[in-house]
Structures are given as structure tokens and as C-alpha cells.
Length: 230
Image (cartoon, rainbow, N blue to C red; front, top):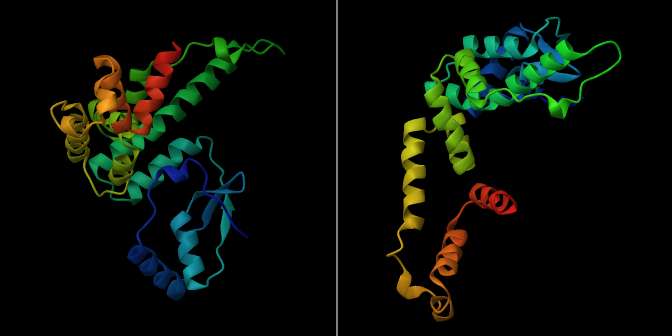
């Protein structure tokens, strides 16, 4: 049977190929010592063990989650078990932030509920962005500023953010890379001679807007569309 990872577990990076092989060899010799934890028929803890069992040809064993706070438990299990860098923890905090916001809204709903009447969720005040960011940062043991930098990188360059999650780049390295990418499109002295002559005859504003648009990433384009709608 195929088991999908729970959204809380999916925040953490999977083991690399060598680590999975080593884990599979150990399971083949000693069996699966720690059961895979399921919540709502999804793997809450043990994605790597599950894959290692498949590699080793060993039947995995499961247990149902018996706690009361799966998000907090997943964070605790993985932070104690894995050797995540500060930058990887910051990337994790970025993905934890909306989950903390969701929990806060659910607590507000529970507090405001009277009898059978439910308050309209859309009318509830949103949790302050800085507050949820700091909560996520504290949960993984990094500074709010580092989380803020990682969040900006995620919006500006999702592919670079993925490299932070995998431990291939630090937040500082990624910041420099994104900054350099953003500087190049803004250098209006480059490649002007190569522009189509028809575009050169257009207004200066339209001419530059088109140049920015061609070089903008997807996130920037979506932000610009939202700004235009407003």
C-alpha cells in the first residue's frame, strides 16, 4: 500500500541516496526498530524509514499517532534526530509560519464560538506576520531576521530557496545570489543597442516596463498583477 507523507512531515528534507541505503542495510540486518507513525492514514513520522524498508524488502510496521499536538511533535522529533543547519532551520520556519497562523485562527474560532453559532472565519483578524514569524523562528531555534531573509528568498527565487532546504546553500549565499540576479535586470545601460527599433520609438515608461517584464521572475510578475488590480 502506498502512503503519502503528512504535510507536517513533508516540510523536512528527505535523506540522500547514501543515507537511505545505509538505513536499508541496517533494517535488513536488525529489522525496523522504530515504527512508522501515521496520522489520517498519512506518514507523520518515518518517511525515510518507509523508503528504506522498501529498498530492503522488509515489511514496514505502523502505529497511529497518539499525541495531541502533531505539529509540535514533528518539529521536536526531527530537530533532535537530524543535523539541520541554521539556514535549513530558517527555511523550515518559513514553511511553519502559515501553519502557526492557521492554528491561531482555529483557536480564535474555538474561543468565539457560542452554542451552535460559528463566527465568520473571514472576519477574524489575521495573526500579525511578524508574530507568527517569530513564533516559527523560536520553534526551530533561529533568529526572526534570518527567517525573514529566507522568506524573501522564497518569494523572489523559489529554486534558490529549495537549495537552502536541501542544505546546498546558506541564507547569506542565497541573498547574495538573488541580489545579483535582481541587479542585472535593472542595469539599463546593458544591451540597449540590441533592443528592437520599434520598441525604442515607444514611450520611455512603456519601453522600460517591457524590459523589466521580460526579465522578471514568476513571483514578481504575480505581485505586479496584484498591484495593477488594486
